[in-house]
Amino acid sequence: MSYFYQAVLLLLRGLVISAVLGLESGYSNDMLNRASDAAIVATTDPCLTVMPPCMGDADRFSLEALRVIHKQLDDDNDGGIEVNESVEFIREDMKQQQTNKHSNLHREDQHITVEELWKGWKASEVHNWTTEDTVQWLKESVELPQYERNFRDFRINGNTLPRLAANEPSFMSGQLKILDQRHKQKLNLKALDAVLFGPPLRPQHNWMKDFVLMVSIVIGIGGCWFAYIQNKSSKVHMGQMMKDLESLQSAEQSLMDLQGRLEKAQEENRTVAVEKQNLEQKMRDEISGAKKESYRLRELRQGAECELSRLKYAEEELVQVRMALKRAEKEMQTEWSVPEALQMWLQLTHEVEVQYYNIKKHSAELQLTVAKEEAEKIKKEEEFCVWNTSRRPQFITG
Image (cartoon, rainbow, N blue to C red; front, side, top):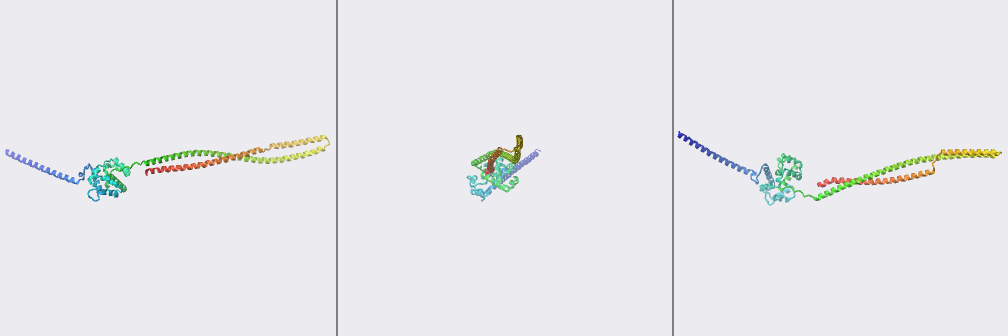
């Protein structure tokens, strides 16, 4: 039995050794296969052939976009971008005349490879832009603020700009929803400019434009203030003129009333004159009758035989004359006539009122003419003020 156990142990030991040797050979073969696969992947994955290496999918997409851009600039396909190729690309593809821009890309390197372009991009300021910086660039430099929401939703930052510069259709149209071809072209050119030549230069502050703007604002405010003062003054003049016109109308009405009273007095005077003539004629007739009666009585008196009868006739004659005089006096008292002195005063008052009316009328006409001229000036100044205000935003944007 001992021999049997020893034989079994030897057999088991041999099986274990063979199994161990088989595992070691399999493990070594697996390691060799993995190493070969890693070498193959290293030769096919571009992210592993550049320095600094890609840190994620965003870097991978950026590197692929930079390869596309490098191919666009490398006209002779020699693997490098020369200065003349950069200048030609700036003039023809980017439609710019600033040929000195190529110095920002080349610096001291006259032959830029993909890896050098990648190194320059990783070290550039634009690569480190945040989403806020990219949105600000979109609004100020590209002038397409309507896509701000899309940029924020997809968190577009500086590392994403190479994909815009490469004009990836799936990225531009599919994700960012930019369908207008003009907007695509504008965004593509601005992204190329930022990726290749750095951030856009901010224009120098134009102090002269600010000075001219301030002067125009001061002139506009001064014009408006002057128009306000003139308008206020014209309102005062118009109020004074209206008062003068009212007083003139009142004087004119008073004159018309006075003329009416004068005409009425003249009519009454004419009526009194006619009645006076009739009364004088009647008095003359009565006096003539009284004279005739007196003459008759005097003849009777002269023909009387005695003194008593002559006295009686004389008394009767005197009574007749007194009665005629009393009747004439009563008739004179019953009638009324305007004295000549009153007529003269009425005529003089009428002439004075006419002269006063003419003077007030002439003064009112002069004030009305001056008010019209001032109103016309104010209207022109207000039109100039409105025109200057409407022109000011155009000057600022210009």
